[in-house]
Length: 220
Image (cartoon, rainbow, N blue to C red; front, side, top):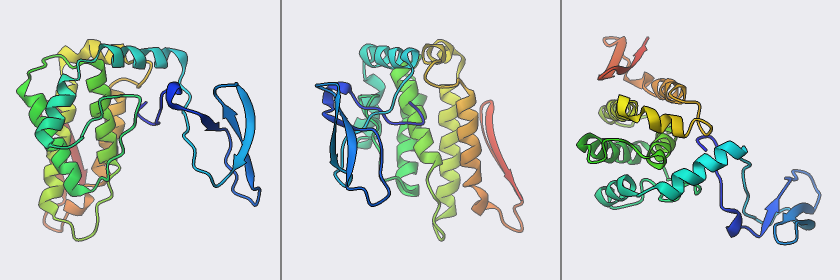
């Protein structure tokens, strides 16, 4: 889930099974209704599906069915926009830049900090991880405010620390087939650290951002 997009089979008509980069005019597609194949223009945009392992699919389905959407609703209401999608099978790709990423993590950190839901639901954990992935993929543009970048790093570490708290151990286990446990967070933090390099200067050769037991460090 964290590294791919998925959509419900019920919403699909034709599924592309190959992509042609050459001069071929038609590509073979799978028809869900008849379970057969047909051909259509390679230039025609079609919905697609990513394949899940069976165990991962059932964990995702269970997380979706048992979700109360309480965290999602609070985050989106506070942000006054969709920060976290309600359907975990639908990837919501935001037009993410430094400012948008900062605002999104600010809201998520605030809601998690309030602790109205002491234990995260499985769908909450997956949604927050998906957001962290999107933020860690943000490209920092030259000339952007360094204060904003450092603040983003602080929110990133805070959100990471909050989802790794001890009371969420069972939640992590409930999605063990979908993600590779807390090591996923370590990998995301490594990617985020690489974006903090612009904060380093001749007079500031090391930066440490710490929240609780979690921290990120970048040095020249």
